[in-house]
Image (tube, rainbow, N blue to C red; front, side, top):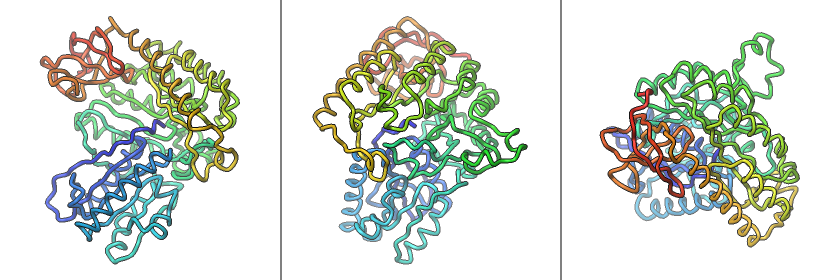
Length: 477
């Protein structure tokens, strides 16, 4: 899954109530989606969400453990919360949610004593009970991983929504034990959500005039519903369950067919699990966005093996070839980890050459950060110096920028369907929206409105956006 935004998101709900809740979310889109679930649960408990942390009775931070930098950001915020608590608001309670809660567990409560509440990603329904413990003067913690929980029965509160795009979670957990990754330990094994509950949530969003939904999972292509339970137990399911099971391609087809006016995106895809059937569904439906986030992490077969990525460079390139042949207009983005243990200059060159060969539209590139508890931390010495990591990372970024620029330039003169999301940051007179290819497009406002689908002819580019002029409404309006 794409997991790299490190900026707080907060929201405000108007409700006459004396209990105030402040929430910040960090990390992947799944964390932001989970915060919407938490907001819904606590709203039912009488909380009003506030944007003013100093006035909150309860402060929650939804955390990411994917890299050390993300954890350090969270720790700085916790220090800030506690400073406010002890100086100005002694009744304030502070809680940690998400992956850091699962990974560090008792450390926050018992050793560091910097929070009152620790709740793992599968335990949010227990929040009312945990808050009662806190109110009674006790520390409270639930980090148990679930074999069943998908939160499919909870209607999320759409946080800071522009009324245009919304997340819809379809799977939780991950079975792919990549040696560098903490996700299987913090979010547990893969289990999928009942397709009927997914369709009902999307219907509700459609009724509320949302124009785009983003299907979320640590690995959406692993989606498999056979009546509930872990994906790993599917082989023990009954013949009837197997015969009536729904995989991701079938789910995507059902959604696109049922909601032809709704734009559909999904993330994140694992190369080893993405099937030709999914690509065919993307090609079949105009409303399924022609964009795939397809992390590979390295261009070197040797490093891929050390990472326990269950595919080779060539298998990845074969998948990309199928995507290009079946969906020529599709863009692809990447995740790359630079400086994984034992990475040589040849391995690094393999990564650079892969970026050029695939022609990614954009990417998310990071220096390797050892995560305690992972196989990589136990098996490999972090032997690449910070200086080498920094140099290699910059070289990867430079190559990606050059490749991305060419991809952007290829759209000049073409007309793209753009969904308007907001006013452009560069000018109050311009709209900002995304194309099906997940590229930001800026164009003059004229008479168009947020939520409109507009055909825009691309005239020029910047480093990160396409610039153009609207030519007409899209038939999706």
